[in-house]
Length: 250
Ligand SMILES: Nc1ncnc2c1ncn2[C@@H]1O[C@H](COP(=O)(O)OP(=O)(O)OP(=O)(O)O)[C@@H](O)[C@H]1O
Ligand SMILES: [Mg+2]
Image (cartoon, rainbow, N blue to C red; front, side, top):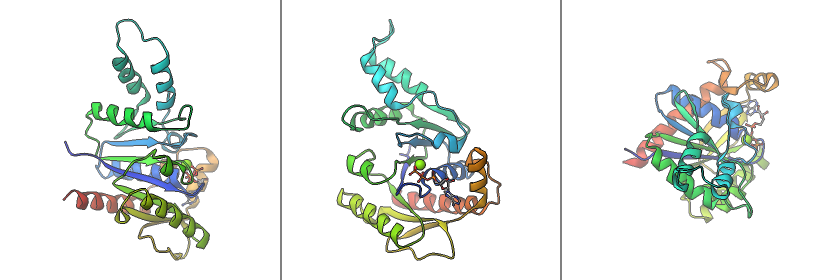
């Protein structure tokens, strides 16, 4: 089984990480790149809403109980953890969704990280892509929530200030050992092909009234019309990622 291609979406608050993650997951599944594992690494989990999926527990809440509670009779702890993990995994058409929830105590995700890796390994679902929606800012990179993805996508608003923030996130990721050729910029809410700074650009997602309408109505963003410009752009992004991941496997 080939290893999945891990894509982490990072960026300043409100630049469209969750929206783009949802549209990208939808586009990958539609293109036959399935199954996808969607990971919501934002403690304020909301990727499930963008996808229109309900979740019953998070990796954080599971961790807390699986290690502090007494185990049901007839089960060992590892078995219990696996069982809880299965419950935390929301299954949808073509993808599974896992929310990390809040890290316990020190704010360190290291433990859930190791557990996540192990549990994903035991699933043997043959995920083609793992798409990670992260929390705003750079802390998750500094904390090592997401270790060495195959590709890091940094979302930004158009405009110089946004580009500078994106540049800082890229510099931090590089300083922590991620190679520069794995880092790409996405300009979101793009108008008139805004200048994109010096991080290689992988996609421009236009400002899309259909996203605003879904937001207002409280409906999943993946329900916007097929020909919505942001959706078309997300399909192109999915195509680029499929190519990039294949190239890196060769
Ligand atoms: N291309 C777009 N066109 C129109 N509206 C958009 C677009 N992208 C995102 N939005 C809107 O911008 C807001 C922020 O988007 P989103 O929640 O995806 O950002 P985020 O980076 O995940 O935010 P956070 O940092 O809080 O997690 C939402 O109201 C969303 O509907
Ligand atoms: Mg978000």
